[in-house]
Structure formats: C-alpha cells, structure tokens
Amino acid sequence: MQEVKASMAGNMWKILVNTGDKVEAGQDVAILESMKMEIPITSETSGTVKEILVHEGDFVNEGDTILTLE
Image (cartoon, rainbow, N blue to C red; front, side):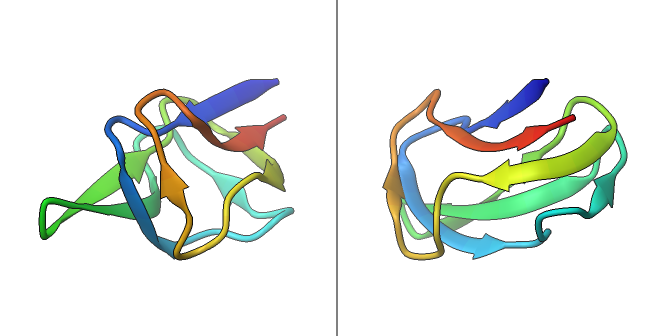
C-alpha cells in the first residue's frame, strides 16, 4: 500500500480522484491551497485509490496522508 502525502501545510481545496479510481505516477490527485496559492499534490506511484483520508476544506499539515493506493 502506498500513501500520498501533503507536501506542505494548507487547506485541501479540491480532491481530483474518487475511491476506486486508477491513477498513474505523476498524476495530480488533489489541490492544496496555501498562502493564497494552489499547489497540486501528485502521486509518485501508480495504483488504485483505496481510501481518501481528508475532505475538501480540511486543514492538513506537511506530511499528512491524503489518500492511500493499492
């Protein structure tokens, strides 16, 4: 199981995938809003979204797990 983590602290602005979606390495899976900028969160590996651990509008810290892939 692989984890996709937040690269910095901020608000989860948009989640671009759903549970069960297949993602490719390098694909944007979410957009984080921090310091009035939109920062894409990219999956480093390919897989299927097993679980999304945050909701749009949630605050996340750097290193928090956004979603898991299998």
